[in-house]
Image (cartoon, rainbow, N blue to C red; front, side, top):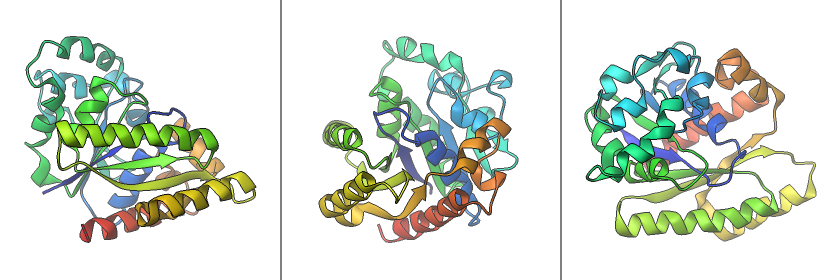
Length: 256
């Protein structure tokens, strides 16, 4: 049975989608079966996996509304080695259409139940806001992976996100927990980033992943070629870090 994880952060521009795409590719590189769910109407995780969001016959939008199932809507990422439940602009209207539907926050969880035995990991890329879409992701997941930059404002936003996760766990999904914090776009030459990194380790202890994702040009270039960074340049420091992170995730989940 698949372990389901959200990649979430209410702050935008923190490398959330980059983490979702490359973690999916990194875990797949270790021989695990992975489904990546794109819950962001921008569809960046879909495009970054080499799939044209404009040509999707069905997307997560149809799945949430019960117009298609996951098996019909999923697409293989040829270079990533995983499956994608893609998203496009249609998803922007889903929140309005879901308002009057019973158990609207459980739509994704119920849909994924039909395929959870076909995967080892299901990763959900959430939009950078606390929306009904994000709530669907949190209600479907066993845990949350939080990518964050080691900057002051990121620390401020982290407190809000942790409180949100606690509220969802208390009221809707008692299985939900924080799996770990991933330091991304890290530049060891910056004193502030080193200081914030140390604060995270002091405050959250073993909840902070050992792997650190460096700031890396090759990771930034990869989406323009429709490739995960892990497939675009396997030898780059960023790609190697995500492969290492995939191994750390597999090891950490085995101990839960």
